[in-house]
Length: 388
Image (cartoon, rainbow, N blue to C red; front, side, top):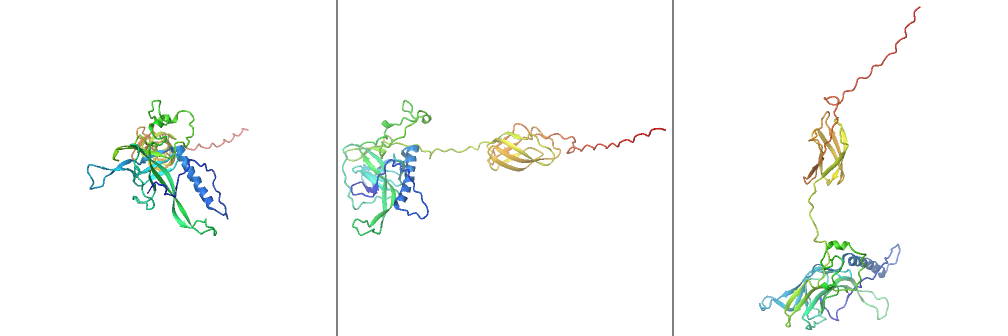
């Protein structure tokens, strides 16, 4: 982490939308240059940033609270907090240009400076920059605003081979881009952050939030980048001696909708049987196919067709269709109260059909119908002989 000053280098602000719509196409024996690889990276980065900006919006997703810094142990007990200092807690922020701002360590900010810069992934320490001395300038106003914006920093310098003999050749190049951020101390709340710039979508005429209004209205216009790169975090009021009087984490903070906390636990809806085909089975001891239709059929279920039946195979086609192979004992009779189809899921929830499955009555009560005797073959009569 470094204090903002003119001697800092290696970090750049990203533009809002570079509209890169060109992607390199690679082919065999192609000479690939750094420009080709950089173009590919910028294409996908800008695509994701544009998606974040237009689909998800921008603001604080979670965390990033601004808190006072407790006084060290052994100090004056009447002074609970360090003067002129606040601490920004860890958090995740989407910038107005679609950048992800990851505050992975708490950062102490002195209100008498312009703020601090940090690189995501650095150790959670407060190093002292040997090249830059801190310059403290007491603010001229009692209310200050803490904000954060995205920074892209160059890291890992490496030696490079000079191209020629010219003196302008650089012998060192940065080999990495690293996501970073800048926490600034501003004299006013960043644009599009406070309550005076409340969006119109999702709000009624009185300014009350109504989620259902997000899906109504005319064709919305694409948002521009007029809000700037800053995301407001808090307003801080200080006394003349630098003691922290008030920290408001809401009046200058824009929250973006997140579904990370939106979840539910399923209740294991019971299966239901709406119908089946065929509605009757032959009581002849052979395997027969039955298609059962319903809802909430789950893997691992069991199916019963009542007494005198055996379910030999189940094939779950989807959550609404079950194919069963059923064997009915020879000569069995259907019971309208017991021979119903009952489907039971693995969570023990079950559902039954409202009508029974029937077995056609056989002509013989002893299992199976007796074959009819074959008709007797009639022999033709010999013609009578005529008399003399």
